[in-house]
Image 1 (spheres, rainbow, N blue to C red):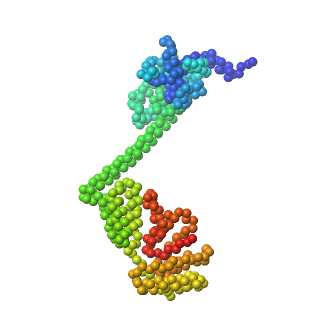
Image 2 (image 1 turned 180 degrees about the vertical axis):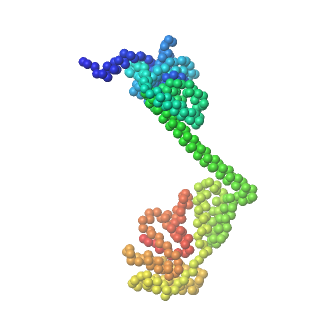
Image 3 (image 1 turned 90 degrees about the vertical axis):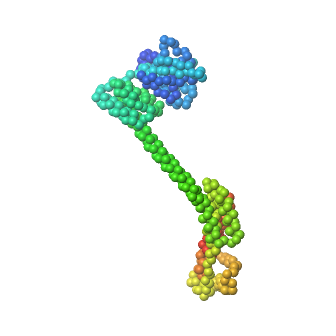
Length: 436
């Protein structure tokens, strides 16, 4: 059986491969020539470190695709890693370990040979691709250094020492590795640089990552500045309000006290009946004891506002002229002789009672209009209001499912509103027509 070209290539790689212990890392990508500390706490990683021979401290460090996986399988790791040397191992108080490792070469993991007690894999060292245009690569490298210098100005975790460090690196491939390794970018972005063997593409991709990081930091600074300004403004306004309160208190003009005085004056000016005034003053006394920040304060204040805004002492004089009323009814409605006679009879009785006792309370009957839609019930109500010189209010009861819409809500509810009748009475003794 003849082997395919791909199989022949894999066979050549395997013949050229080396076998090393593999240590997966959660959130770290190690580049060649980079030295980093790593924390070792997982069972397989501890066994790997403990069993490393003194004469061979080489391991392959590879990043996990998902750092949250506690016991990663081969498919959970990237296929490219870094051949590294363990420089120093430290014992930690919690029986874990930490180690200092240094990257040596990029490697491609060909296959895993052992999974217990820790991973071992056959790996192939990979080399950077040859570059044909040194001039373009040098220009890209200079651009990378320039952008890194700009990043130094805005990144809080970088300093001028890092710029000097990069200026001493002459090889573009290593320059790209080192620049990206200093950034706090995501693992996939770093892994992309690790796997890129074309030096031009690697440097170009590094430039893009650095530029993106500069934009991210600047945007974060803008947002932070806006938030800081907003907080400073709020603190300034709070400070000024507190100062104003202190000044008013010193002058005996506390804001809430002034407000309560205004409400008390409004109660007196409203000229309520004695019983209503007692209720209003009692509610005002209760209001003075409620903190202004309490939701109950708003409920009580709204109740007092409604009490003082009702036209308790305001009256409207009925100008009932039977002849004029008849003319208005005839003008607005054709026919309806009996209905018009009943309305004129009602108005005549009301006019006689007013003539006999102008200041007395008039308790007349309630007129009830019955009939199908469109026969003129509402327009008759408008005509009566017009003839008496009153406002006309129409309250439709159709579709009403809650009687609270008519009589009002209980004051115990936040946002309670008075009913339609009380709302209508604010219009100064209107003619109210209920439609069923």
